[in-house]
Image 1 (tube, helix red, strand yellow):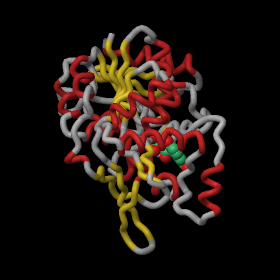
Image 2 (cartoon, protein in one colour; image 1 turned 180 degrees about the horizontal axis):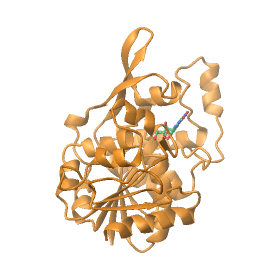
Image 3 (cartoon, protein in one colour; image 1 turned 135 degrees about the vertical axis):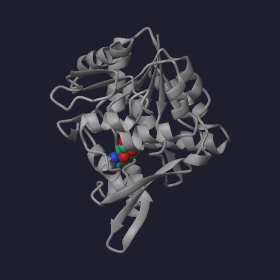
Image 4 (cartoon, helix red, strand yellow; image 1 turned 90 degrees about the horizontal axis):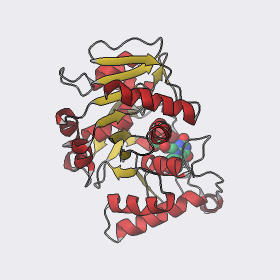
Length: 313
Ligand code: FO1
């Protein structure tokens, strides 16, 4: 079976560990969000691609869900000693090696999909990891500041301000000119099932579907599309999806997130929806399942992956 997953950061990566464990002999392609990407200290950082690569490759900091385990921060300390800014985005020494290689290969003219494949040769994640696009796309957030409304890079809002500044809307800068990276549309067309894991619907899955051509392919592909709610009891399991959902006027509950994606036949993309027992049932999706969506270990993630894929295949 060929499974394609549209994934963002931590929640998506945890689900992928379970999916790989549940379907070890099947072909898994991950279309990763790149709108979180940021240029810092002259380096291109791709948080969601790296979270998937490190998590599946065994190098992730499992407590945080991002960055490298066994990390040190000597370079960052030295940058601080020079009074360098910004330092609010913590780049560890091991992680910097990834950004140095990525930036060098991009500067040599290689597209992001080839660079990602090259980095994955070391990590061997067991899936094909594709950026949603090779083109530069960045999520910026329009927020309220003391000096009035302002736009800032998603990472500055998310990390420096802990998403505490009231967000009015998100804009995916560069999205209109972006084209799907090579292999992305094929993966959607050739798949037996497409999965939306419990990633942030707004700033992780949203940008992927916003790349011209990707939503259209997901809508038209014969493969069933099944999503997993990352909201449990009105709160995201991890991260601040509720704050992002509020900014676009979507209630932080499983049924509202399902409605946000929409049901196939109703102008939306979902054929199936898996959500936490006790949360409101989605109305229009043709197949839905209430179960335990918390992935506290690999076995739980594998069970969630099995019931998710099984719901529509
Ligand atoms: N998140 C934080 O809350 N603080 C950080 O300093 C931070 C640094 C960082 C460095 C590399 C990387 O790949 C991710 C990093 N993240 C950090 C997480 C990042 O903001 C999130 O992974 C996503 O962008 C949201 O999904």
